[in-house]
Length: 327
Ligand code: CP
Image (cartoon, rainbow, N blue to C red; front, side, top):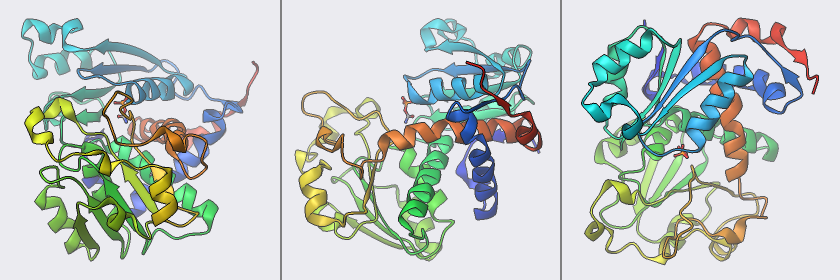
């Protein structure tokens, strides 16, 4: 079939772990101990029609660190979609310019539409409230890396997902990916009106996992191995829907000291909202080793390199392509 990454539904536990073995091989490059030119001559089209720092830059940096080059277009205003060009035409045109595309777009299903119009590899960098597969992959990679350091197994772990579980696409992809493991206990903590979509609850339950829902952070975090906080996606709904979202949902040092063990891992896809009144994740954990958010962002590079290596069929060449850093 076509080489594309549109949804985490594409993965089995075996294929995801194979991707992570490739990501491990990329670590010396990501850590600047080695260089590789395995994608020399290839050009990536980074098409972002929604705000992004991490996904856009880390996909770009991952492609460059494998020896490729990146062409960017950012925002509707700076693309010809502002002049009414369709997804189909945009995708056909880009296919003649670049060798792979990463696309972020505000509508669910839009990236699949781009992919249908082309034969070059397409990666979903976030389609509205739909999915964000590369984020979920780097999140799972982070959880497995952290658990390995702590001598823990993912099977049977307690994962608490906190915040806007309705519009947060990262948690939609992540819960499906985690469901490939066994016997997980999920606690879903969200304000009324921002609960996880029903179909994802049913799907997770069918895979034999336990799913509990609560609006109490304290109750939900008790005994968690992983806390995954999320930002309220204010850009996706009317302000009135926010009623009921209070600072009670903030993950901070006091609450994790009270509810969780010393080995808990605190994650967040980022960005966290640092504006007045925002309450997703406190800065009082910034120097706390339990906070894994910057280890998560670092892991975005090797995981995204692995994604490109597989989509462009060079995963077998990576090991031999490694050269010493000369700078
Ligand atoms: N986590 C994430 O997708 O961040 P950006 O929106 O900055 O890409």
